[in-house]
Length: 235
Ligand code: DC
Image (tube, rainbow, N blue to C red):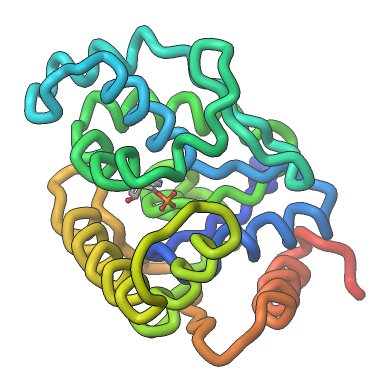
């Protein structure tokens, strides 16, 4: 009797600032796999909605706009990026307007159905997929599921560090950190409490706290888990 082969997928879920993107990219690079940033697809969908001027509370209008949007995600861990209707929007989707509206758009069940379909199609022959519902909804058969977390303070300072690296900011560093912490707490609350596939750990996920670890240590831990199930060659 033959059994279906396990999908070559590593599911990486967790809240903002837990280190998912750096870890997912690093693991994908090490394995020569694809990197699927599902948060970027929700962000591009949100940008489409904002550009349309639609009311964010009108779920039918929001879903219709997302259905018309052409969202193309690069799955190359060394060249992550995303386009909307043919335009590279990789920078714009990280701006405050999109960040402020993305939880509302990603709470619409029909938007989630559309984007989950897109995300699954991107997995291909092997992928590290990061998001909020990967182990529970997008790839429930993934042989390795990680729920990555870190303390709120560590997550806020990581996100504030991201801003230093690219996005213009105003005010003193302490104000920025406080504002980032408040925004993370707001998004975590919305993302965890929505009815449609909220941020939650799969029952079979391995919990990793990255607060006291650097990215390379977390990447190594994930690769160890992949080796244990035969997804990665022994080191
Ligand atoms: O990972 P990120 O911060 O770029 O994600 C942006 C938002 O998208 C986040 O606030 C919640 C939503 N999201 C989601 O609902 N499900 C996913 N699989 C990924 C992201």
